[in-house]
Image 1 (cartoon, one colour):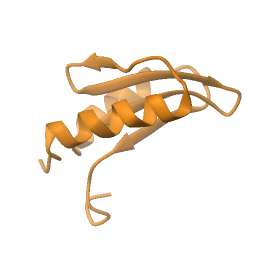
Image 2 (cartoon, one colour; image 1 turned 90 degrees about the vertical axis):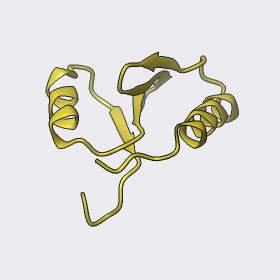
Image 3 (cartoon, one colour; image 1 turned 135 degrees about the vertical axis):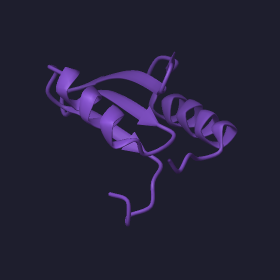
Image 4 (tube, one colour; image 1 turned 180 degrees about the horizontal axis):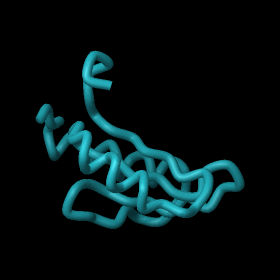
Length: 78
């Protein structure tokens, strides 16, 4: 699995949250979760790498509409 540098992902997530005025990110075993609260983006998951099974499991577990997934992967993998 291709994984981005953890410090780069952590900095990106923190900067994204700060610049948009959301709360701080929640650290998860597989990445980060941010509650955004906007009408067309309720929440965001940030994954530092592309693991097809983890992405599928996460997608199937989400019931909230307008939940965004951000992941670090090459376009070829997606």
